[in-house]
Length: 251
Image 1 (cartoon, rainbow, N blue to C red):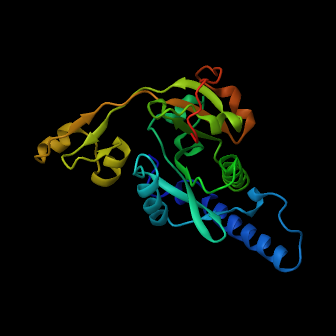
Image 2: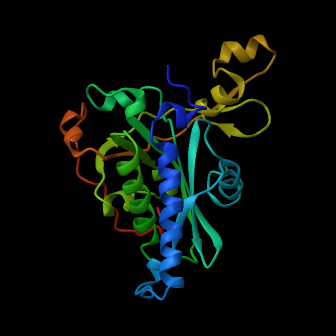
Image 3: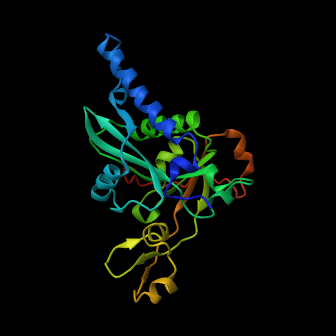
């Protein structure tokens, strides 16, 4: 079984993604310092580079609407503007059987975009640029074949960023409950397993912990294929994008 706590070991090339992006940032800085052309768009002033998981966790717990970082997250990128950290994107292992959405895939072929938050101070279309930079790095430096992400309709999110960047929509996912182990914090099953070794209700009952299930709504599910040839292996139908007449802001 793939160890979700060791993303770099499970996915050859993850370390190279980090190194390549740092080198790319340095090259960009040298170009400006050596008299290269100045950016022609506010978007070109953004820097996307790897950051420690702990730093991403801190900003996401404070700024993301879920105020948490799922267990199994192992790769984090920060978005900087004028040396200020104004966004975070994280990746990790998602639902246990997510790889079965694509015929012949193994868990190591798939990553889940676990969180994406960008400050409203960033320029318009920053989401597409940041996501594009990370996707290109993953495609160059890893063997990952496809990514998975979700948009929460209970928050008014349709997945506009995924529609704008050409992801494949596969409908609503199965709604799974969150777990409250008595501290008032609703955790995903992945986070429980990561922290406590199990998300089994029987396991917690044996240790005298009463778990309250927090029901959730189904979420819009999107896939992006880093290897286009794998798109023909989808085991579920590709569907038209969901639409709404009401704009809910960044989603």
